[in-house]
Image: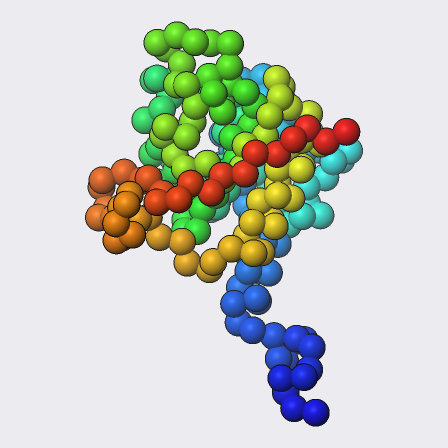
Length: 187
């Protein structure tokens, strides 16, 4: 029996799997609640739902200490540059969950003052539907993100659309292949 026949354990596990495991179990969310969805986001951190068992004990007030942005609520045109600035200050790798119909598509606010989808400002990894989405829906979105981190590549670089070449800094961010996941409301 050679080493290739052994199951991966602490000694024979691949470094990539260890890095993915560490990232998945230590995702730190940034505080970015904008409207009524933020109440549901806060309840996920309370004792009933307790996201600390997922390694997300505290919502970080500083973007430099966070790697997950949960955009909860409608984003106004005046708030869009602030949201992008907070996203740019977050450490790599970083992920975004769009929570609620207002953050995902603008919701019922189809006017000039509201951004019609946060994906126009930052790349979204997981969409959580609902108005407002229940805490269970946000937990489902977080678990979907954890699965995405576990099965994804370690390094994710911004790419120029269509060419596959790395994008220069300062030109914004558009992924070559959008890989956002839309979760359904759990029953």
